[in-house]
Length: 284
Image (cartoon, rainbow, N blue to C red; front, side, top):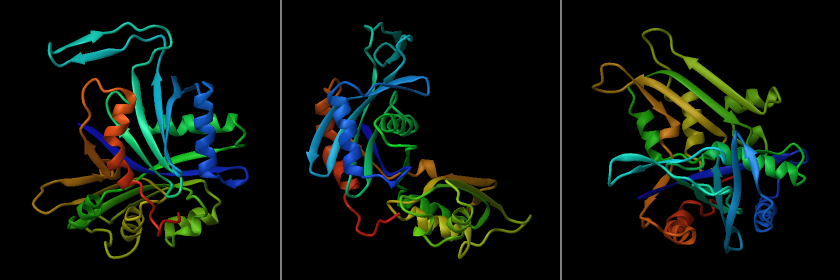
């Protein structure tokens, strides 16, 4: 089984919000010309395959690896680890990312080993800057599943909330909440807030920080980078920690062992397109 998770993309350069269709086309063109190779966080990263699925949907295949390391694989049949020598410039790790430039949603394969969203963010940022996007920043923010909302609501008492947000696509004022208000007044690019309840008490679940983060988490496109909620759950002796990163909106698909790159894309395409369909209410 292969997991595919949904993210929203937020891109800004010195002139403001980027043109997303144009940006994805630039990346695809560099890949076609074999000019997409970059070193990011100590890894060689490139886009090696592209597929135009529709006018506003493009799939990019990201690869990463280190040319001076021999990869180690786990052999399920023998129960042992095996080192595999490769030719120079051959990499073992690859994932598909499907971009809907109208909805600004992206479906990214999750597998191990794989290419992390952090690497994809930094890679697109570096590639775009070299292509002329001055001071470009790219954020891929996870789309949150409904289970996160339920998990927080089920807590009897909320003891602590830590939230990290990045500047939304347009402006901090896109969403009316105190986190964005302070970030806007301070001209911040990102913000991190932590609130702790008094000893023996809990934070309000009906207003304030908890309602703000739940409101943001319910949107497909939001500024949320991560949230950690600590509280008391019914029937549990100790505190329960709820981490937003564990509540991604995702789907599971069957991919045959030994499938080619485009066979993998065929396998994940339909369920991915459903996750990243245009949401008319998304503006952040």
